[in-house]
Image (cartoon, rainbow, N blue to C red; front, side, top):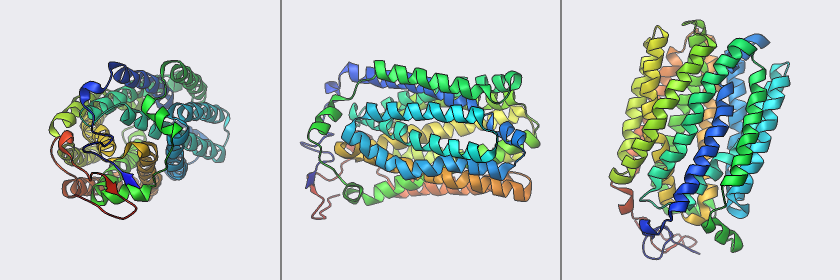
Length: 427
């Protein structure tokens, strides 16, 4: 079976002028929907540490709660990404939103940690469908020449919600308790369902593929560029590993050592979101012009520096400064990694490949929050876990430096007319 990845006659051999303005408009519509969803998701982020305290458990249980979400995403991201290749991006996203709303209602009624963990696992399972399908959607309607920009726009929508959600959640928890925000999050999720149903249409390219579906296995796709895909996998794992450590170990440290309030935790995530919202657009465009590789490497270095900064902060102002540096690092790596995955991948396998990388990302998130919680309970602070996160982050940057191609994405040349079944690879 021949799979074209780039070059003459391949799916990426498209003049940027052929991409209709309406396609980028669809990216904006999806970004708007994602912003609404992330408001609902962000509402609950600053609440979990206080909910854990109310239930009488500790950082280890908070780590289990976070890991339960990631484990189900690991298990289902690949299959649900493949399902979006076969049945459509929109259908998978809509089903995921219904499940996400239901999970939030369970949170609101939970009286013990076991039910909370079960709801978090369900939430992870359904969200495993939304984000790979959304990333695959963007890859469907873009080319390597504008994909970084489009991924930046998608991430901007993500960050708009991330800014508003935690600030709103912190205020709601401060004045209305820790349960009502989950009900509000469920309502916001259903608003997202309506916006996706009404504003987003299935990409024409994916409609054509579904009519003549030809399955392309992950082994076949990854066999074309094993070094590049392996480097991206390590970089993505490292990025999410650090975020998971920070979310559990340092937020517990901030609550106990710095004695921050729910509003201050919400403001912290709001600052992160604001910086990432701007940075995603800037660095997404820059990756289209100058190439993806060195932004990923630089983002890893800046990320490691920010993790060290978290170990020495003594007040909320220092917390916000360290968070801003971390947000810049995430902005450099996140949209750029997603865009490069799209650059490398045959269009017939966008969904399943995005799902596979989602599983890698969430594999890191399944390990790091639990590890961060255990290390925090063992040491009483977040220094050792943040140091480990910095080392893993630097390892991700080193993998990108060694394994990824350099130069503007339009000049990336993968194999042309590769006969994967025969195992022939051209570089």
